[in-house]
Length: 166
Image (cartoon, rainbow, N blue to C red; front, side, top):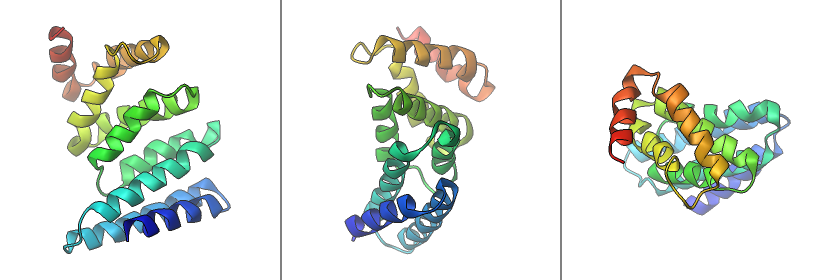
């Protein structure tokens, strides 16, 4: 059952001595659930487990451990659409640490995971114009798009197309 796997994963990750151990355990579980999905199981269990892992990490990371959040997304076997939505919702948070985690993970996925690139890039670029997000989040998204995303040849065309569509 998806809920049982997700709850067990979240508990196991938070119970580990170090976050790195928790992430390694979480990724091992994700790969096992993904293997089951590839053998015919539906994607629900994997999606729920991945979201539970991200959720457990979101609230438990120190500033020095933030890179683990993006690494988890980068090294997961598959990035479901629900995870991109989750990362985008972090950028709408009033908690600055959540915004940083969301922007960083979306950026890293857009730059390094071609299969998730379009969805993550779209979510990031949308933040540059959304009036319902805080002004400082829009400013961070604009700086990220102009300083980091646009500088990448693989992303440049999409960034320019988005800018010209205004």
